[in-house]
Length: 335
Image (tube, rainbow, N blue to C red; front, side, top):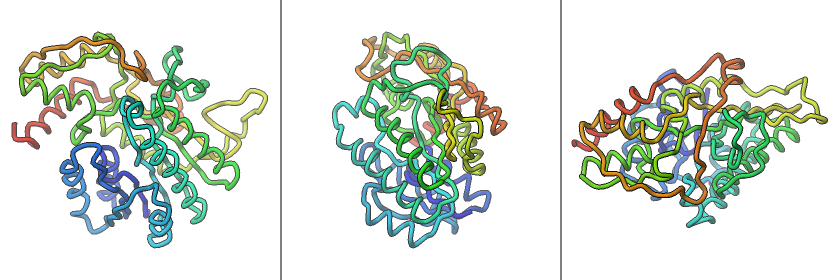
C-alpha cells in the first residue's frame, strides 16, 4: 500500500512508519518537526525511516491547507493515518490556540484530502482523555463521552464527530483509535516515564501528581502500533444493526468505528515509579502534588471490540516495557 502518515517524526508515527516500510509498504511521511519538544529526537527518529527507499518526507503542518492539498494530489495515497496533533493535557490550558489550529483545522484538512481523493481508509488518533468525567470502568467505546475535562480531550472528541460526518456524507471509511498512555523507546520527553528517568538519573526530584494515586492503563509502543496496523488493514464497515432509537457511540450505519487500544490492566503510578527505580537501580525523590487541572484520576480500557473484531489484545507488561525504555534511554543518551 501507499500510506500517508501525519506526525511521522513523532513517537507513534515513526514507529508505525518503520513497521510499514519493513513489510514493503510505501510511506509518505508528513511532519513539521514542531519544537513543542526536543527537535533533535524527532530528527533521530526521522533518520531511521529516511534510510528506506520507500519513505518520502513532506515537511509541512497539517493546518496548512495548501500544503496538505498538494501532498494528497502529488502522492495519491491509498490509506491515511493521522497521528499529527498538538498533544498534552496540561499544555492545552496554557496554549489553547495550538490545539485549535492543529487538532481541529488540521484534521479538517485531512478529512477534505481523504474525501477529494477517495481514500480507502482513514485511521486517526483519538485519546483515552475523551472519557473525561466518566467513572464507569473499564471505559468502553459504546459509552457516552460528552463531558471532557480539557480542551485537548474536547478536540479529540471533535475529531470523532468530524470523522463520522465524513463517513456519513461521503461513505469515507474512518476509524478512531483511543490510545491509553503510550510509553516505550523513542518516547516523548514531555511524558512521565521520560521525565522521571531524566530526573532520577540526575538526582533531581520527580513531581508525583494526585499524590501518586493515579491509575493508568500504560500501553507499550509496539502494542499500540500492532493495533494501528491491524485496524489500517481492515477498513471500517457499517454496523447493520445500528439503531437510532438506541444509538451506539462506537459504531454507525456509516463506515465508522472507534476502538480503545489499551493494556486492559491499569497500574498505580507508585508501582510504575517503583518499576522504574528497579530498572535504574536508583531511588526517586518524590514531590507529592495534588491532581492537576484537566487530569483524570484513572484510565482503564475495555478492549473487547479490538479482540472480537481484530483478534488482538495488547499484552506487554509494565515491567518489560519500562526495562526496554531504560535500556534505550541509556544507549541513546549514553548514560
